[in-house]
Structure formats: structure tokens, C-alpha cells
Length: 346
Ligand SMILES: [Zn+2]
Image (cartoon, rainbow, N blue to C red; front, top):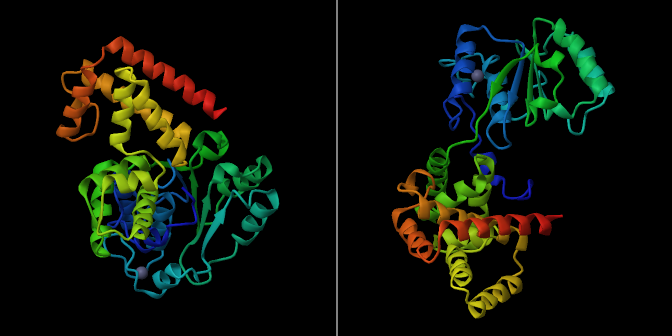
């Protein structure tokens, strides 16, 4: 999904307090407590998959430690510090994108100015996004400051790839690990957002948005934002699949049946449709592989519900298709599709 598009809802719903965060309790709770206790590390590392709240939480923390009227550790979002932080005019909270500012000079500039006391706030906060992108020289320059940081300085480094950060830096940071956001939590938030904009979205559509987002709430909200453009009364599961360039479930089950029943005519018609619709073939092959995997699960497992997140009637449908086959043929098909998917990609 394009990063820049469909982010209006995401920005509007970006949490501004610890309480507003979705999931990530393992990180939110200790951070909030550290604000209440006024005891926190001056170098924090946030790691985890994209779209799971790292930058949002960094901004909340930066505000919380500087807020003039915090409530149980939460920033008030009303005092002059919070307001300035929210509109981006607070000089003492700096956000640096290490992907585009990765040189020694960029970091030197930062470490040179960090010695000066904050302009307005209590702490000078540096949020360094994608910190693993820094050059070796830049890391070395940063290390010197991390070894003896001024009392008013706080670094929050965010990364999707913590293994690329030098051990010398890691050892000076308190490390917080972000998890993929569970589908149930994403669905709850998506539902809340949809209702707020009077958008009718079926439960199955919300489910598939969460599934497609793979734990990244930002992507899920982006999908919801995209569905607004469809201008239909009710957003259904297939609408979301089509919009995401995926094929509807019905299409996958027809194709699977065609393969299992060795019905070339039905298959060719399906493939023709697929090609004409301009969908991504590699994606389709991967999805079809996933469909056969689900068939295998219902074929061999007594309790497939525990392994695949699907409604009972959908599992029944899978069962009726899986009856046409056996575990070893299904396994062969899965392996074959995985190989095909790899060869299509490279
Ligand atoms: Zn405040």
C-alpha cells in the first residue's frame, strides 16, 4: 500500500495519550508508570513491525515527560507544552528520520546542540525514526552522547530492525518491544472509526481488513480510508479484497474446486477472468496456496477453528471442498504453488 495515500483517518485517529493506544500494554504500562514515578531511562529503543505504534508512543512519551498537568502519567493535551508539541512548534521535541539523515554530520549537529538547555520544556527529546539506517560514523558520534547524556536530554530511537543496531548502542538503551496488534483489537478500533464517519462496514469486511494488515494498525486504517472512496452503502468483505487487489473468496474456492476436480474448462475460464481483471498473479498464487493450506488444515485437524481464524460456515465450505481430496495431494499442491510463487517473483 502506498505510504502517503489514505492516511487522513490514520492521522485523525492517531492516539495522543497512553490511554488511547491500541494494545502494546507491555510497553505502554511501564512507560506510563515511569512518567508517574519521574524515573525513566534517557535512551529508549522502540522496536517492532511497522505500523504498530512506535512513533505514536514516542510522541506521547515526549509530551508526557514535559506536560505541565499530567494526569496519571498521561499528557493533558491542553497545556502550552502539549499544544505546541501537538502542532509541531515545540522546539524541544525533535523528530529525525534516520533514513534521510543518516550521516555523521547530521548526528554531530544534533549532539552539538543537545548540550544547550531546552527552550521551553523540561526535557529536550530526540525521536530518531528508523535508527538502524544511521551510518557507522553516525552511530559512533551518537554513542559519545549516549555515554554521557546531559540531564535534560532524552533519546527515543525507533526501529523495525533492531538487529542492525550496534551492540554498543543497544547496551545503553532501555529496549521496548512492540508486537503485531491482534486482529480483535484492530477490528474494535476500525469499527469505532467507521461508526464515527457513518460508514457501514460488515463484520467480515472489518475482519479481512485486519487480516490483510498483518498486525499493522496503520495499514488497516489505511484500508478503511480507501473503502470510503467506493461510495457504496455497505462495505462488504469482497469490496475490501477487490480494493486490495486480491481475489474474492468465491473465486479462490472455484479455482480450488477446478484443480481438485481436474476440470480444465472451469479453470481456464477463471484464469482468463483473472488476467483480464489485471490482478497481481503472484499475489493470486500466494493466496491460492493459502487457501489450499486452509483446506489441508480442515482435512487433517479435528479443531480447525483453533488454527484458522474463520467463521463456522466458511470452515464448513472448506470441509466440503477438502472432501474431494486427501492430505498428500493437498500437500503436493501447496508445495507446487509455493515454488510457482517464488519463480514468478524472481
Ligand atoms: Zn500538557
